[in-house]
Image (cartoon, rainbow, N blue to C red; front, side, top):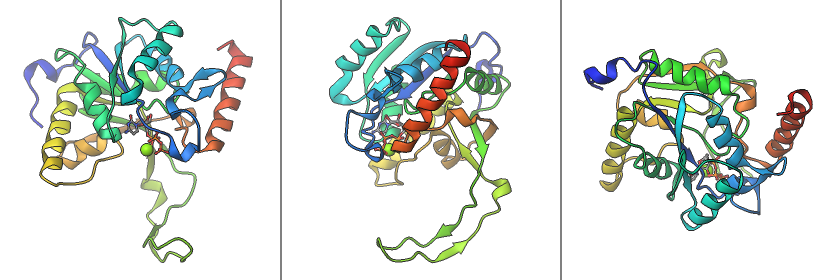
Length: 258
Ligand code: CTP
Ligand code: MG
């Protein structure tokens, strides 16, 4: 993707904003409130996630993409937890994560050099990961994802109807696989461009939406690099993840009054 001279050097002064997609229902977590509003240590996941970003001195603005019918409630909730409305905005998200991110991006000023996209469902990401992603974009990368090596061996299968054993196709070499996390970091203009292209393709009956933003950069031929993620940046997806998150939070609170 072409780079304008202004963007070539996104040095220490480039403004950084973040989009937090928080419009999902959390179906895999089971019945209850929308996932972003479920509590961890008495505080909604979304509030943890926004605070985790705000802990980075680089991040100046956070745009939350809320469930479309919950914008006012989410704004009130963030206010109630002392998050300054000047630096945190709430917009209506969409039907897919990709659409929620696109709508969030639309609320970020065009003179913002760098954008992070961070799942509301990753409440415990350490600030070191946020800063490392920003640093890698500042150092010249167009798209940066934090990732960790896989613990499990992975097999590619031919999916079958429930109850029918799935034939294995092959076993990719685990050493070259990474599980990717957020925040993912981008030159704002590059991320904006691929989201617009994907929207145009979609209306022309194109490819299905992606589950991470770097995937869109890849789809249109851009270059994505990986930096080390962190085991505590895991996504709260299933009920057991909430149990683990509570344990991590309790340990932090015991050790440093987090
Ligand atoms: N997300 C979003 N808009 C959607 C769907 C998802 O903003 N239409 C957000 C979620 O709120 C979450 C992040 O994208 O913060 C990652 O998605 P995922 O973990 O899949 O969350 P949900 O879609 O809510 O969960 P599930 O797939 O189990 O329903
Ligand atoms: Mg989902």
